[in-house]
Each structure stands twice: as C-alpha cells, then as structure tokens.
Image (cartoon, rainbow, N blue to C red; front, side, top):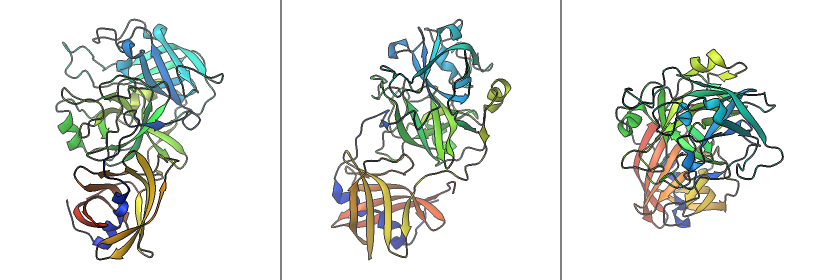
Length: 392
C-alpha cells in the first residue's frame, strides 16, 4: 500500500544529492566490498576437481556449521555434463578455511579433505527427468577431521521480505560470470517478497527457496558464479546467522547483477530437516529479534536525519541532514565513510532519473521505502513512500 506521510518526517533524507550526480559504481562480488575470515571464521572455500564449474576454478562457497560439517549447495558437485552428481564427490573435494585469499593462503589457513559428501535425496539435476533441477539444492560435506573455528548459526524461523542480508564468496566479479576474486568479498542484499521472486523466475520457485536482490533500481549487488553454496546471512548482536544458501540467479536475458533479477537461495529453514538428520553440533536460532542493522533514522527533536551509508558516484559517505521546514534541507555534515559498515542500510542517488532512493527509513515505529525527486537548490519532493514490514 502506498501512503502519504508527514513530509517533515520523511523528506529529511535528501540533500546529499549535491555530493554527486551519477548512480554509484563500485568494485564487485557483484558490487562487493572486502570481507575477512577474522570476522566470518566459518566461511569456507570448496574446490571440486573437474567439476561443472572447473573453468571458474571448480570453486564453490560453503559455511562451517559444526566442527566437522560444512554446508553448501548440491549443484556444486555436478559432473561436467551437469545432469548428475559426480562419481565419488568426496574424493574430488578439498575445503579451505581461515584464509581471505584462496590463491595465496597464509600460514594460518586450514585445509581439509572431505570424508563424505551428502546430497539431499530429492535433488534431481537431470533436466530430461526432473520437474525442477534447482529444487532441494543443499549438500553437506563431512570433514576428515574437526576444526577449532566458530561455526555459523542457522536460522529456522519464517523468512520475511525486506530483510537486510549479506552474501559472501570468492565468485565472479563481472555480471557475465567471469573474473572470480582471489580475495573474499561481501555484498549487501535485501530479501524480496514471494511475488517479486516468482515474477523474476517464473515456474522455478518452490517453498524451499527465496530471493534476495539489490536494494534499488540502480543497485547491482548480487552473488554470481563461484559464490554458489556460500551463505546468505544476517548479523545479530551475538554474531552471524545463516538464512540461505546461494543457489542460482540471472535469466536468459539477465546476467548477475541485473537490478530486478534477484538471486535465488535455498532456504535453511525449509531444508533444515536434512541438516538435522546428519550433522551433529549445529546451533540454531528461530528469531530475528536481535538483528543488527543500522537503518536511516530521523530525530524529530533535533530535525536531523542520520544516513550512515550513502553512495554517490564511486564514493561512500556518512551524512547528516538538517530539516529547515517547507521541504527545504541543508547538509549538516558529509564525511567519507571509510569503514563501510555492512550493517548500515545503503542509500543511492540515481542521477539519470534525478531520484534519491532511500531504503528503510525509520520514522517512529514505522519503516518506509522512499523515493525523492530532486528539484534543485537542495529542494526535494516525495515521489512515493511505501510502508514495509521489517523485523524490529
């Protein structure tokens, strides 16, 4: 439902357009920033010798969910034809942990062979016999010996739309699926509604999947080839919690990183029984009550709005705006944001359409997605303000 809301509350989020005039462009995962296994110690790189993606290094991502278990996608273990699981996939699989760079691993890197690879029994990759080759895209890798790293926790509750999430991996940095990254990257994604997911991938979406994509019409953030099997996760006050497994994306007409074509993720909650049947020592959470995300917020007492992450051109700013009445605003402060906090919700300026796109503006107890038309001289008008339901 689109609604009107007091302009003094919503429009305070706009004057930053004077910082630049074009939509942002950044380095990628698609559109990624550096990440570290010191922050995400459970992040795993999986190499499958001679696998379907051997042209991209044979790599997939994964997550350590227990001392001797790594979670990933079933399709990582396809044969070269892509229509069946490779023979004896455990013998082809090596897992690397505790390194940011998988081409030049440090002395602290941990490498393990796989003792077993377990594929969901309902995964059917042969297009000649399967109704849906993407469904049940989940696998477990048992390590030959346990590791002493902190596993990621798994989310078993309902998956809401408009949830700020993070994807991470060593996958392609170009939308056509080429140019994999040697270093670990992360990117911010927003879970979509079921309707948006279904519309983007007609006939392919089941109850075992959900979508997450870019925040705005100008945001190219996405996962891509080589990120398969890696985690989609959120940061809670106690640390990271995984909600999905990178499965597939794009279309016949859209590459990775195409706004409006969200990626598809296997749902941890929907497929948890498979994990629970095999892996011991897994920690689960069924609530998003303590999710840590820094929304763009308005302080009515001071007439100030704080936007911790604003993309203008190729730069990232932390911005404070002052509301002066009659829909007029001026820039109180604008400092280059070097930290790039992954918990901060990003805002974008679409210079081509002269629109500022502000996801998740918190006003009191309500949250909005807001579009503002720039009218020049630090003046803006609301184009739309759509209320959304998010986890508080």
